[in-house]
Amino acid sequence: MFDEKGQMHTMEGVAAATIMLLVIVYAIDATSMTPLTSSTANVHVETELQVLGQDILGALDYAEPGYNSNLTNDILRWNGKEYIWDGTNYMEKGNASYSQNNLTNNLTNNLKYTLIKQGIAHSVELTFLRNDGTFLVTQKMIYNGNPSDNAVIVSRKIAIHNSDNPNATNIQLTDIDPSTNLYNIVDVKLILWRM
Image 1 (cartoon, rainbow, N blue to C red):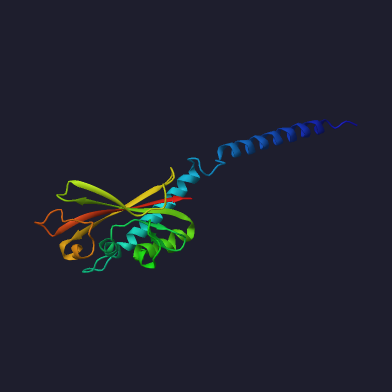
Image 2 (tube, helix red, strand yellow):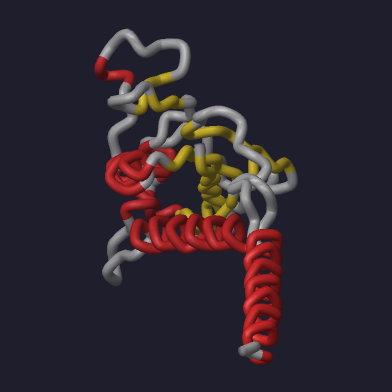
């Protein structure tokens, strides 16, 4: 006795297996296999870094009315030197032998507890006007090497006023317009990248 349906079931099984195999091959081919290529996964990581950086600068720039923000105070107290992360502290570049050469402020404390614990490399640059307001200066506050091609830059502009008494603490900043209360504008750039 012959079963004419048996051959048809075999053909259906082969066709179904072929379709499943094609779907698997297509799915593997459609997804990125390397994390360093520009893919949707990498874009997602960059977006997370951008949001994290904006949150850090935004939180540090918050201040109650009548008070300076923590970020403004950190800029005013900065001595113009460049610092690097040595594994435990932000040390003065080229002169890390004394503990007083550490940079400890609200910004560095925040970076330690957010970025360093997650293994995120970062640098901080300050850009401001010099002399008559036409000469733009960029200085590194924290430098941790050259960023990768997929680095994210977030920035925040901080207005420094004469009432902040910037001459008493920061020798880098100059008064760009003595006829007004505005002393200078500092663009704080936080550069983030995955190591």
